[in-house]
Amino acid sequence: MTPEHKTVARRSLLLKDCPPAIAEEVMARGTVRHVARGATILTPESRADDVFVVLSGWAKLFRITARGGEAVIDVLGPSRSLGEVAALRGERYLVHAEAVTDCALLKIPATAFNGLLGSCTEIRAALLASTLHHLEALVGQVEALKVCSGAQRAAQFILSLVPDTCGRACTVRLPYDKALIAGQVGLSPESLSRAFRRLRAEGVRVHRREVRVDDVPALAAYAEFREAAWA
Image 1 (cartoon, rainbow, N blue to C red):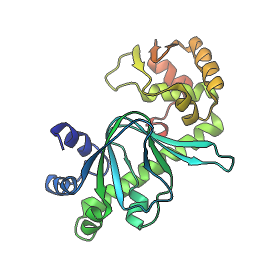
Image 2 (cartoon, rainbow, N blue to C red):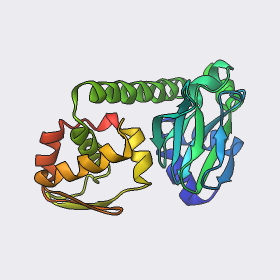
Image 3 (cartoon, rainbow, N blue to C red):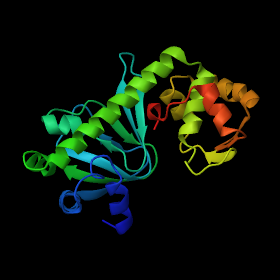
Image 4 (cartoon, one colour):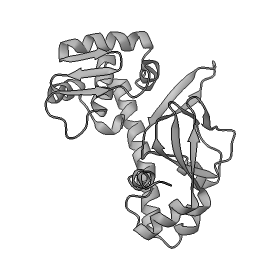
């Protein structure tokens, strides 16, 4: 692993609160896996023997519907983890995962965690924190789907990209294609385009992958933004 990869991995919920020696031990048992855009990372048909941390790029989690379509569950960027719940229970993975862009992943055998669960309270706390984060994000998304308009959900996604250091106005870049963003926020691509047009009245301009927000606090108030839903 490169020093940059270690820094990203240490920011994950799985490792950030672990003692340095424990984190180093876990990372030393893992391997870096490079995955090309469009490649499969895991499927529900495979046994969950490994936990993954995204080091670079983006990966989507999805389920296949009865009609053969994709239901996007989440899209994970650097420092996000996947597969930990199923791996620690010794079951099959719950979802499909696919690289949205070229990715680097830290692949950690579940045994690296299982061997420490009995003796390391920090590992137990980290696994609980990671699981609760996934649950909180899903609850936030369900709430947004039930009570927020399509334009509000599109605004929430844009706001999730705004860095903490941003001032009142900000320009961000969409990290992946709009069709995937549409699936993530529960809209068709056509409805997402209409939502972006609706947001012009809220000071948002979308040009290809670039998004200009004139007033971030005002947009957050309009969107009833909660970061956990799309982070």
